[in-house]
Length: 492
Image (cartoon, rainbow, N blue to C red):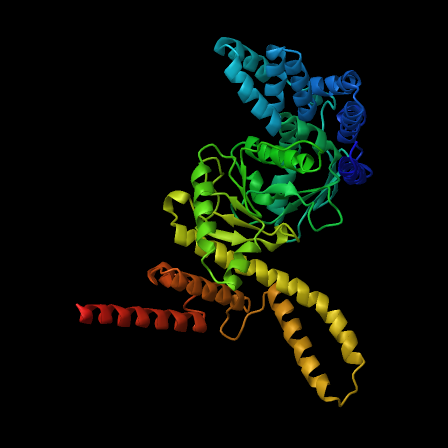
């Protein structure tokens, strides 16, 4: 086996074993670590030229629903001229999200008679993976550990302090049913979920639906994050689907030879776009608009381009008829949620339906929320700097000229961090965090001017009344456009 493959498998084993240590893990064929080990043994046999030995390892895994093993079995059957058997296993692998399996299924579709192919597809759709039944009753009803924590089959579930008691109770009451449904959605989800170490219910705004593993930039990689608003659907199936596909992504990126064919995700450069799972929301216009917007962004100066490039993922979650309506309608076009983000996973939400969004408007939204990502990164960096600077300050003599400059630097960084994490108000009753919105609005104005947009695109911003510099920039912009218009008229 190649060294890279060994390293990848070793990493996956370590990640999942760490989670399994405290989460009463599944054992044998119900365990992802067991399945990956058996699959790797098959790869090792194949590398030695023992194809028969590899199939001995892969067939039971294919029967149980493991997509890479299903695809390997399909390839073997195709090589043996059994196109019907190959189509069955290729379609099964495709249903589990295996990209190569889906490609093979499309090829076999062209080779087989249509009625034969349809018959095979019906058999695949009627078949349930064995994983669904290997842990009967999982995750169970759970036990209450406290007002903001429960345990489900060894998985610790906690709720963020900023959530009110009603939201926490609602999420806790629905969680077990959601997880049980998610296990049945995809074979990889059935393996990943029981080995999850912890689940955190987090604030994310009124309507921002989100579920994913916090496995970037954190020591504790096997933790599932879910926003409390995700539970506020008319049925639990949509959150279950979100979790299932997140589980599949979590597993697939560590599997040695599986690329996931994900219907909800597109990648443009370094940015990941995540579409909505709700059937009344069309993701294609969002993916297409984002491609145009990111191309437009290449025309911006380097400092503004970097702001957008700081965003790792954009999640599209406009209003759906499947949401439970509660409280006032959330008209926010988009947002950055620092509580959901970590290094390497800075994410923003787009709430505006693409039907009502212009390319320029979407670009300015990305720039505004991307500015908040940069501000968050700055606050983290400043917080890390403070201890070092305080230590340096102690080494400088009391009356040394450089001491005053360093004290000023420390005070400025401390103020920035305190403003970012705090909620203090000034004498006018306006949040001191408004400075961050003002900076983001200034970036919007700069970009809109550079790209030849109309000031009308920003004139309705709620922040102009509170941001003096941004307001001055708008006045200067309008006056310049007026002068240019008069000059054009005089030349006629």
